[in-house]
Structure formats: structure tokens, C-alpha cells
Image (cartoon, rainbow, N blue to C red; front, side, top):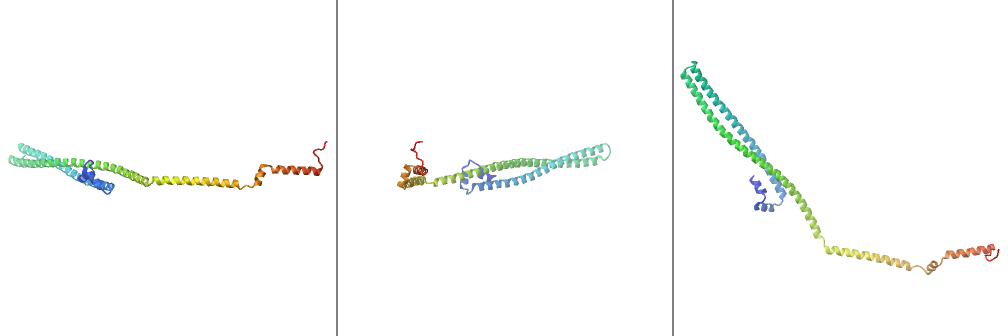
Length: 238
């Protein structure tokens, strides 16, 4: 128990100092829990042994009490038998006296066994209290360990994220964005330049043809020639 108090009693400065020096608090906590479970096994074994002694002392107390009562009854029976003439009074007195001596011895043993039984009962009560305390501490620190592990995970994740954020150079990021913007502007200007060059490469004939409908003029000439071949005169009166 002293080991666990040293390791786990929150609030004491020396405990905090010891924890701060630990290379791995989780492993140390797990080892502390294993030690507590080992202590629990030892306490349970001791409890079983003391309970066995307590039961034995109680049984002996009851046995000596029964013997004392038995010797008392025998002494009475012997005296009654002598009183009724069944045996000599002198012999009866001797045997009754021996029975009473045995009775006294049994009562003395009963008192001693009762005292031992009381001590064992006190030890059992104390051991049961210790066992219950160890069980509660194990449950408490197992829950604390779960919380500690979760906090460590969150802490490491936060640390890694902050580290990554710290490594990002804001000025270089802005410069990179500016270079990308310049690149886009350059590409857009280049595309516009190619468009102007394509418009400038058109021929004068193309411009003239675009100004008049050459296809319609050619068709009109062909129609007129066909009419002349057929002798059709649009100016002739019908």
C-alpha cells in the first residue's frame, strides 16, 4: 500500500515531481496497477488463512465450552449416584472433584480460545477492509489510466498538428500564390495575343468577299446567260 500511496496520491508535491521525471507515465501507471493486483492476491490469500484460523478458534471455543458443561453434568451425576447409595461417598467425591478440575481446565481453554477468536475476527475485519480498498484503488486507477491514454492521444495529435502548422511559412505561401496569379495572367495575355495574330492573317480578298456576297453575284450571271441561250428576253412585251 505504501508504494501505491507514493505513486498515486494526488496532491502531494513529491508525487508530482516523481511523475514529471517518469520517462513514460502510462507504463509506470500500468506497472503500479499490476503491483496493486499482486498486493490484492496476497491480501486475499492472507484473508483466507486468517479466516481459517478464526473459524478454528471459534470451533475450539465451542468445543471447550461443551466439555466444561459435560464435566459439570458428570460431577452432578456422580454426586447424585452417591447420594442414592449407588457408590461410596468418598469415591464419588474424588471422581466429582476430578470432573470439576477437568471442567475448570476446559473453561480456561475456552477463555483462551475465545480471546484468540476475537483477535482473528479483528484481523479478518482489517484484511477485508484492506482488500476492499485495494479493489477500489485498482478500479479507480484503471479508469484513470484509460483517461490518461486518451489524453496522450489527443495531446500527440494536437502536437503534430501544431508542429505542421508551425512549419508552414506564411510568407512563402503568399509568394507562391502571387507567382501562380502571375502565371495565370501571363497565360491569359498569351491567348489574347494569338487571337489578335489570327485575325491579322486574313487576306484582302477575304475581306472583299466578306463585304459582298460573291456567291449571289455568280448565280445572277449564270441565270442571265441561260436566258440568252434560250432566247428569253426580259424586256420583250408579251
